[in-house]
Image 1 (cartoon, helix red, strand yellow):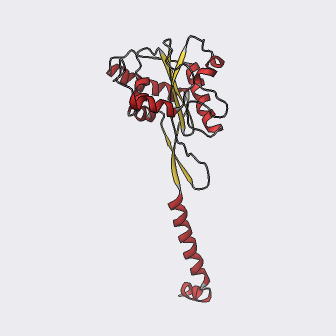
Image 2: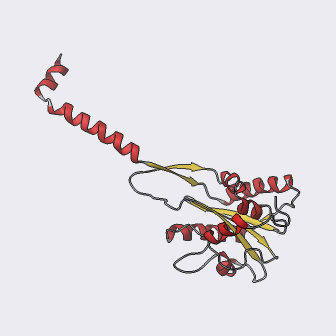
Image 3: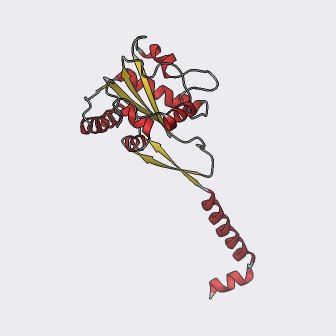
Amino acid sequence: MKRKNFFKRNPWLKYIGWVALITLMLLNSNIKTFYVYRNSEEESRATLERINQYRKQYGRAKIAFDERAFELANARARDMRQYNYYDHTNPKTGTCADTIKTNFGFSNDEFVAENILGYSDFSEGFFTRFEVKPMTDTVESWLNSRGHRYNLLFENHVAGAVGCYKDKCVFLGVNHKQFGKGCHTAAEGKQHWDSAPLQPGEI
């Protein structure tokens, strides 16, 4: 009874309550969920082991974990977030994994072939929600893409690693066959794989 009398004396409180409820519903409907990935050397090693399981399944040799590739992959993932782009080549600086690899201890005759994963519209604004996923989840995403799968299973890779920063993840396969030489864009890569005939060793 006291509660009913309270609202009779203050009818405007009901309207405020309804406005607040409707506002919360509208806010919730506009919230976008982004996946972000855990990142550590332990996660990277576990992810490489997952890659090696698939490599074994398809008759490929196991590749070793490479700390240089892990650090370079992390740097590439951070670079994409810092400059707000999603591509193999930084559109502002023109750098890519191949042009900065020597900064991480690679020689000029070692090559790093890159896979990337992430959002082109990633946001950290008020209307965003984040779901943390294990780094190993990246492997299946790459396997479902022809070009990315070819890189994961490339028979001449000898080492590699995966590194992530927030939503961006990078796999780098290390080889001596000039696979990964030069800077290219994701659009160029897509165009190539959309029209390329079956490659030697492709699965």
